[in-house]
Length: 537
Ligand SMILES: [Zn+2]
Image (tube, rainbow, N blue to C red; front, top):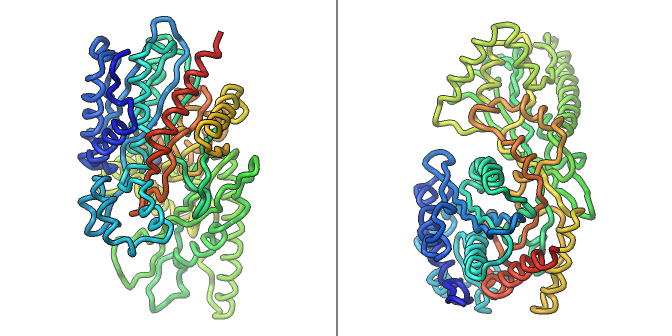
């Protein structure tokens, strides 16, 4: 057998540190440069020297790209897609150690000198010598490195199965990379007559609660959606507060009812979604003035297990109607006490109804022009553009005010779950048994990965109802945000996530368990893949 480059724990550790040192924060130059460096590494493998056409970079946006590397066995059709993301979150929280955030070996040593600054459990882990600290070690360059080593082994040993290594940017912000990759996966499938058996992600184990030491294997991924609102009141001067109604006043009723609202919480297979929380609530006016704020917006985070966008919109609308009723009654009571007339009742409308109203009033051309102008503003992200479109239409349709306009802001991660798939159940049992027997690791199955992942985009099980409600209530849909729903339905293979153990993703104390990452999990994944092709007739 040929000598493997990435075949030992030491080689994996070295490769990880190199790949971590290529800083690739989301939306930075490093993220743009990263995949070409992985490409160069893979070009060094004999298999890709013989088959350079199976290795490719594909455009995403903003100069960013994703990488695919296909190992194609001449007789095999069954294919496993190994998924990872290579972007990382920011590093400000490292403070003066920031220059070392991407040098795991140095950072781990430097932290020893200031160990008292760390939380107790991180201190313990640092002293144990069992962890490597650094941005991207756990989330999730180790997953990518593990997949590279598996790909190398498969190509060297000629495994009778096909593998696609897919690594994408932008997972930490909008998952633009994965949404673009879906279409390429469909193309690769058609071009090489592949049969996708499994989408295998390598996100790390996320603790379920502080201090949790369990190892998890995930047979699904939690969904996330952001029901949002634009509030439109009636402007007045601060000296005459009762001749208007402020948007923050209206918003406060909805926010009170959305935050921690248990009716949004789902309980499935003994797992629970976290309750909703407000991610943003702000004024849509740009600067301070003595005119009262009459336009504002709020963005709420809701996690999903079985519900789709249509169900969330129905629920959100109910909560909003209840909020509007409470607001109207509180407001009219105050007006009665002061013997003034109200400016009207706050109504609740969905974005699609506002849009239809505006089209009827002004025509399609005018509405498109409003959108085009807002979409061209490069200072605004997808969320801000969503609010601005609804806001501008409402300014033109003040006969609807005061109002709460309900909409969805990107991103949307549909939930995905493969626990009932026979192959997944078999893989889970296999890893649990082998993990315990070989390494004494008590693996537990979790049905929904709680860290949000790109697996949301490889398998969509809804019949389209939730989908159409999402599309028609997302102001930027089809312009600066879309989800390749049709292609997602063409993939339809089960999902699974197996990654190394780590702690504190997105924190200064992000760290990777050395033995789990370089010894245990790569072997478990390799053996599981072998089990898949050996048990096939
Ligand atoms: Zn991640």
